[in-house]
Image (tube, rainbow, N blue to C red):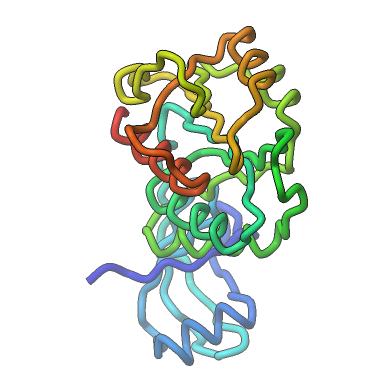
Length: 235
């Protein structure tokens, strides 16, 4: 049976004991009904995996004894996605959850000319990413960057591979046929209504390669999930 994983962002690699916060303690002891002597895993979100034993099953301040620590190798290459957030918050939250479960290094909220939602509730979205990391038994928390303008992203990108998925009727190869394995990658996913022709032209002039994600027109969050899936499948 797999051990449950709990998030411990403030734990240090040399800690011998760790006290869960009240919310996590309540979930571990009262909801999951763990007790003294049970083993659990802790993740700091930065690749450290702690195997621990419950020493004090207090439902408000559960104390753990750290048994041993492992460093999980970082996934390489780094896969990043810059995606315009939708006006419907639940749709982009769904995307974040699935992207974290599938595997993504960085998510950049992209503010393009047609983006409908520029402000984000960072704390709520961070909690969704944490939950997805724990659910999928991973030990690296995806990086959720602050919103960036289209110009910022395309001008500052230094990835080995840079793609832009758009819907204009021009010749494009599919992402799976264009992407090369083993190289850091960034893909841009536009808003409802797509990128403007001017934005596409700007990205292409800076070395971004136009790609297709399939034969159908996808919603923003669906396009994002397809992109993350295809990037992971290529590695």
